[in-house]
Length: 150
Image (tube, rainbow, N blue to C red):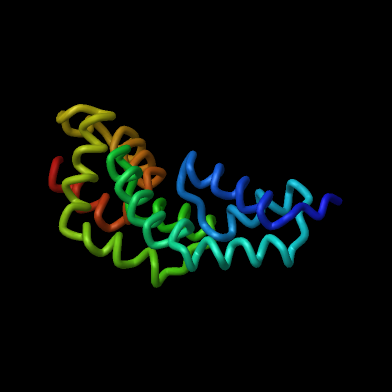
């Protein structure tokens, strides 16, 4: 198992961060997978966090904006960020800022997939609901939207 100098670990971490934002958990996993010692990785992550190069709040903000543009809902985005190791305290503000937008985003995701036409029967209604649910929109919001459009 290569020990690696902290300069080497930091260089690799910065290279990974230059490609895209990472959470502390993700970056730690990637560095440890390359065989670097836990203590050295933890020290580098602490230094990167203190310097602002590793910023989980920035990750949450950028990730939410990207996933919203791609038509995903709050439940899925929250789950993906939690999987990256971000706490709810960092996720909630970025999702709550868009609370008024979620119904319009749901409608846009629906129309992009199915067009503006209404569902033709119960199986089509269910298919549309499953799609929106997989995209991460809350069930009650989906029901309201699909009933309103019927």
